[in-house]
Length: 111
Length: 117
Image (cartoon, rainbow over all chains, first blue to last red; front, top):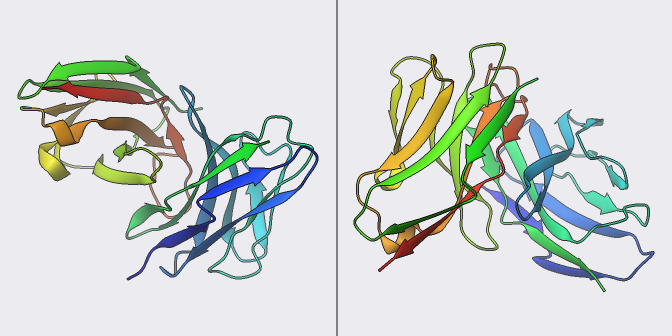
C-alpha cells in the first residue's frame, strides 16, 4: 500500500544532541512538508520541498534542517539550536490530484 | 496572508446530539478549505474539502461542511454524534487558494471534541 512512513514513533533526545526524524513516501508525490504540533497551537510549518534538491523555510525553521536528495525521502534534523524541541512532528506529502497525505507522526521528548 | 480561526478549543456533546465545529477563514483569493481529524498520537485524516462548485460538501463518517463566502465560514457539522467521533479536528486553508500540489496548508489551532455517553 502507498503511504508515508515516519520513524521512529517515539524519540528521546538529550540536551545538546542533534536528532534526525525519518520520513519516506512511496506515493510518487512531488511535494513534502514537515509540521510541528504543540497543544493548543495547531500545526506549524517547519520546512517544505517542492522538488528534489530544493526546499524552503516555513514559519518556524530556526533550529531545524532538512535535505531532499531523493523524491521519496525528506528527513528532518532537530539541532541543538532548537531551544524547545519537545513536540509531535508530522510529515506530509502532496500531489495535484490526490492532495495531502500525512504520516503517523514522531513524538520527540527532550530528557 | 491567509489565516484560520477555530472558535472553541474544546467542544463537548452528548452521544446522538448535533456536532457543530466552527471555522472562519481569512483569504484574499478564493480559498480551498479542508477539515481534518486526528486521533491521539496519529496523523491527520482528511474529512472533506471544498475547492469549487457546490458549497455544501459531504465527507466521510457522516460529516459535512458548508462554505459561506459572505460569512467567511466553513463550519463542520454532523447530525448525530457517535462515541467514535471523539478526536481533535482541524480546519485548514490552502495558502494561495489554488489547492495545488505544492501549496502550503494553513491550519487552525484545532478543536477537541468530546462525546459524552
